[in-house]
Image (tube, rainbow, N blue to C red):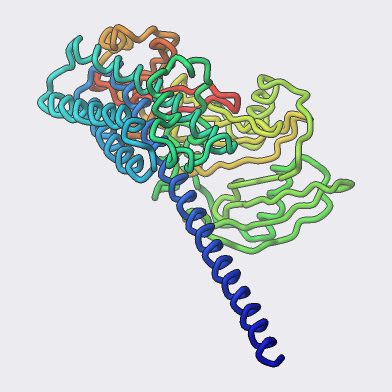
Length: 446
C-alpha cells in the first residue's frame, strides 16, 4: 500500500515537473518571439524612414543646378540607401521579396555616389542625369507606398512577421511586383511632424548671442507684475514656481489661476528685460468655431499688443482644435525666418493658449541688408526650367554654419510637389531647397 502511494506521488511530481518545464519553455518562446517582433518592427520602421528620406532628396536633386548643393543631396541619398539596406537585412523577408528593393537601393546609392563625384568636379547635371533621377524618384514613390501599406497591415495585425517566415512566396514579393495595386494609397508624413514642428529653419533657433534680450535685470515681484501684460483675463492668483535657466536664458516661472474658471497658465518671464519667454494653457478644446484666417489674425493682433510688431504667419499645424502658427519678423518686405514666435490659438473661442518666443529673443535685430548683386529676374532665369513658379519674394535664412543669408525666395511646383528655392542675392547661387508638405495637420517643410 505504501509503495503504491509512493508511485502515485512520483507520478504526480513527474507530471508537475513536465508541465512546469513545458510552461517555462513556452514562456521563454513567447519572450523570444516578443523580442524578435520588437526588433523587426524597429528595423522596418528605420528602413521606411530612410527610404522616405531618399524620395525627398531625389525630389530636390531634380530642380537644382548648383553642384555644391547637389553634392550634399547625393551624399545623403547614398548614406540613406546603405542604412536602409542594413535595416532590411535584419527583417525576415525572403530573398525574392527583398531582391527588388535591395536592387533599387543599390542602384540609387551607386548612382548618387557617381553624380556626387560629378558635382564635386563642378560639372552640371545633363538632361540624361535628370531623366534617370526622375525614374528613380518615381520608383521611390511606388516603393514607399508599398512599404507604408505593409506597415499599416502589420500594425493592424492583418499580417505578422510569422507570415513572412512561413511563406517562401510572401505577400511582400507579390506586392512589390505590382505597384498599381497601391496607386490609390495616400502617402502620409506624420513621422516627420515632430522633427519639423517649428517650421523651416527652426534648427537654428538657439544662438549664443541673445540679440533681442535687452534691458536691465528685474526682480521676481516685477516679473509677476509683467504677467498682466501678457494674460488679458481676470487673474485670481499667481504662484511662483522658482527661478530656472532655460536654454541659457534665465527666467522666473509662475502658475497663474484665472478667476471663476478652472483654467490656469504656466508662464516664464525673462530676468533680463522682463520678456515673455513661454506661456501655456493646457485646457482641452472640444469644438472648432473660428476659421484659420480668423485665428491667424488673432495671433498677429496679440503679438502686436504685447510688443512684437510686423510679424507674418509662415507655417502652421492644427491638432485637437488648436492652431499653432509660426510667425516670422517682416523687415520691409523681407521675411526674417530666424526671428520666430509660435502662438497657440484655441479654435473654439479664439483664446491665445500658448506662446514661445525663443527664436525671436535669440535672433532678432534690425538688419543692414546689402544691396543685391543679382536682381530677382536674373536669379529667376537661372532656376531649373521644370520649376513652375507660383510666387517670389525676399527672405533671411540661416545656413549650415549658423550665418544669415539674404536670399530671394521662390515658391514653385514640379509635378505633384511644391518647393521653396532660396537663391543668394550676392552670389546668384542656390542656398537651400525645401519641400512643402500640405497635410491634414498643417503646412510643413522638409
